[in-house]
Image (cartoon, rainbow, N blue to C red):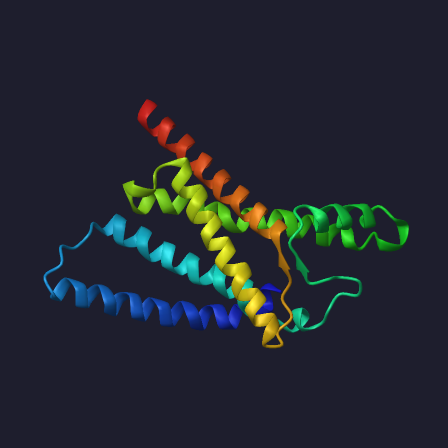
Length: 188
């Protein structure tokens, strides 16, 4: 999967970098107060991360154009797919699904950890648990909604409330990491 994303990711990164630099130059030339270099770097990383997440979740990879036998593709019942995947992984004939189930759970959580770290770093407005939770939820819901729309256009992407739950858990984990580093930085 990573190899399939490498070329498009590099193209998107190059375009994003160019547009970001052009945008910031226009802002500075219009008299807007320049941010510190650290803040600029954080904003740039957040934009790149944001686009990377959209690329991973919305880009129609060849492997996602094939429906998995027995999979509904759309799930609005919390934990239904996770429990089904885990129960099937312990059957002898479906042991190959174990790595898929773990990859799905861990992947969704890890995908949103940077969100929970970067969001409060880019602005003091986002330094509360509630705001990171809310914006993580909204970002994940937007992704699942776009995946639902893409299904209507013929691109097979699964839509699952479990992904939203796992994404929000990842954002919360990222926020906890942010808070722990902030506490340790103040104590030193």
